[in-house]
Image (cartoon, rainbow, N blue to C red; front, side):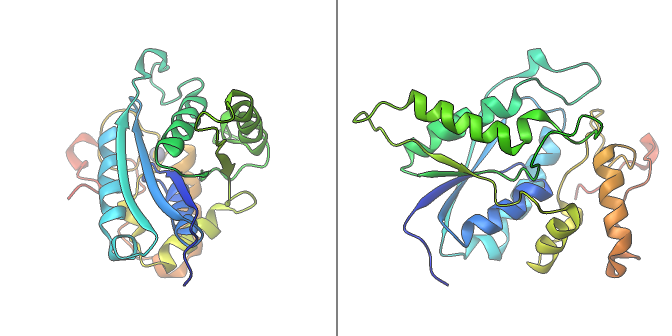
Length: 234
Ligand SMILES: [Zn+2]
């Protein structure tokens, strides 16, 4: 395995896409992960997933792994009621990651978004997760970069563009990770089990159903009640 001399920052949420992006980045760059607490309603679930991922030997012992930073940027005032959607979330995360990249001499920011374009009818498609969005942000970063004053404009890489969820899940599973310990649910009520109802849960269950090996898995994707909300927390 050859490790590039170039460094990358990968934005990591503990969700499947970001973990697949982390695995990709480790094979291409010295990689430092950045987690941002921006006020997401499922912050603790994401953090639990994150600790699980970065504590695994596949990460800890990888020669390209350079560690995890966790920072806080409070975006909660713009949080929609009963929703996890925050306007311009990835604009903020992308901008912070670019700053972080310069601070750690990284020339690349790796993001786990898969979308070539925005799909208005798709509930898990967001304009600020698309290839055109990150291309535009990269242009803006170049516009804001002053030559000679640490004047290195980091570029964005989206290695998962064109991947489907099945490929993402298979990649993570094949790398030896327990898919049940990651968090991709949009539920906002604080319960520690995937809701089984949101678009992410439905998509994930659909794929897990297709993985014969997961037919009997305890991956919990049924509606939880308050009495039965033990979820994935251990
Ligand atoms: Zn859900």
